[in-house]
Length: 89
Image 1 (cartoon, helix red, strand yellow):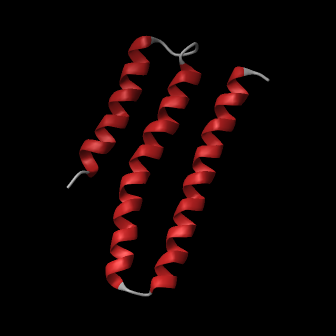
Image 2: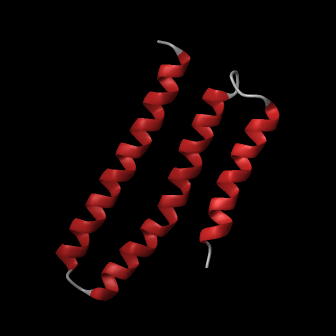
């Protein structure tokens, strides 16, 4: 199996897993039917989302490492960090 395909497959699987976690969390919110429980579930999702972004971005950077210069890779990493900086409370 080609390396690039493996990386794309890993990125897609991570996103599918993240989507399944989101759907499961929504179903749990319905099941518990309480705002306090929904807020706890939502807080957990708030921790998982950034981790998934970092993992998928890291996989993408690994896949691009042979095609992109170091300066452009640094700019991409800086962009991901700016997303986190811009969205923090």
